[in-house]
Image 1: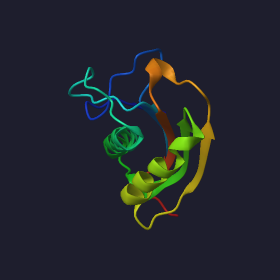
Image 2: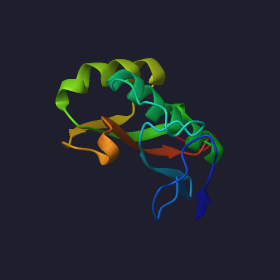
Image 3: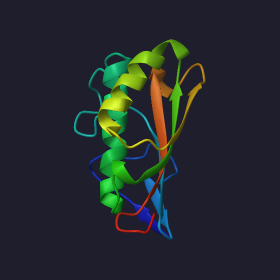
Length: 129
């Protein structure tokens, strides 16, 4: 087991790792839309927050030796299902033609009042599919 730590995503605020690699799989912890270079920056609307959270996931995956194109499953937590359209547009833009398994889960309030949080599971790059 290998713990992943990168400056391309926010430093964990609790007792967890940004990701864990076990075998040929990367498990990315839930990522909030926090800019690692400016944690106090205003988070923006649902589109902005989705883009930032996905960018954090991408940075962690790359640090682990993977990437968005190797994602197997994504769980997107949203504070309100009304954000579905914005979330789906940004997700589609960032994932391109790759279509991993996905769930969008309305959860009500998220930590610090954010609108989205993303958790992902991916294969390591170069592993057989």
